[in-house]
Image 1 (tube, rainbow, N blue to C red):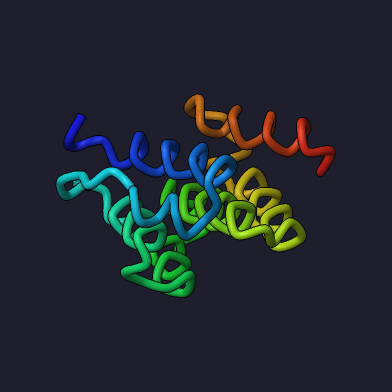
Image 2 (image 1 turned 45 degrees about the vertical axis):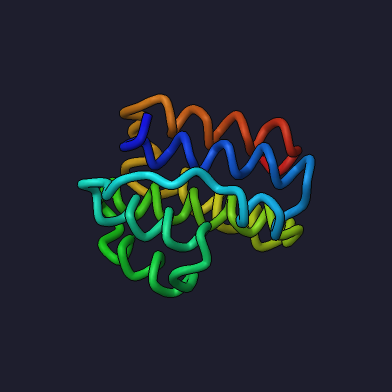
Length: 121
């Protein structure tokens, strides 16, 4: 799907496990512009086109879905880079957001399962 930002990021995350972070970045699927600003920034972060701080700014409003998603993808990015403590902190923070606590979509469940599987709860 040429418009599926999340598909591209998740493919990257899988490939980073197998081929390493830099190789996964080089072969990352190119997608069209996502209508969600926080997902555009997440995609740009994984592509190397913006910084972690840029994505964090997209999630600056704690009660918004953007806060949950920015923190989750910052955590997944840190984990792909081998920064486990940083990843744990970001993902724990994502589930602690109002959106994360409300469990409004499957991604909030995914974040909780991720923490559980990693033994970070």
